[in-house]
Length: 119
Image (tube, rainbow, N blue to C red; front, side, top):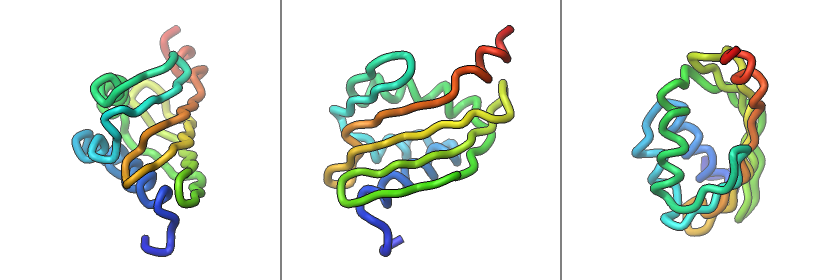
């Protein structure tokens, strides 16, 4: 991993942690004052972020990496998650990293498969 950018290293470590359902390890990459803009709205602070991430991690079965790019401060990770309710849930996170912690996340995912599963 040493050939990857610092932000990408952090983003990939975070991704691998939640992908393997290790919420505590995933949260170790999250800054206390994280701000996340997600489809449902803005999430502020590590406690709120953990509350946001935990239900997803519980329903997750796996996530296949599609692409990952990064530089010194920013990384973009795109993946397709398999969850209990839906077999394909594409998502992407563009994160800002400072001192090895994710301080900002712009999180996008396709809500349509989840809405269809609820009906």
